[in-house]
Length: 114
Image 1 (cartoon, helix red, strand yellow):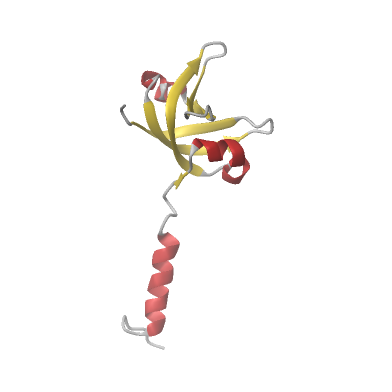
Image 2: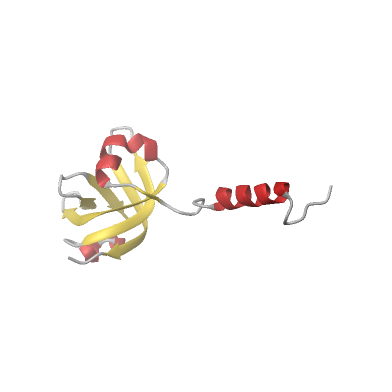
């Protein structure tokens, strides 16, 4: 059987290949309130979210939070420390631990400005 670009089967295969590739490398946009309430659905997933960077000293940790105080801890610290108090958008791998702690390992951070 010979496939040409004009054959219906070739067209279907191209659409399937295109759609299967779409989003495979993209991160899901997930608001902080969703990560706080439905974190188990995103455990181990790459996500993009945003909030204001905050810090606590003892023990030292950083997180982002929204206006309703939904929070996700950020790692590594040196990736976010200079953005304290800023509104940022972060991408990375989300993890939910067995005690309900939410953590995002940051692969990209963008300051959004005020």
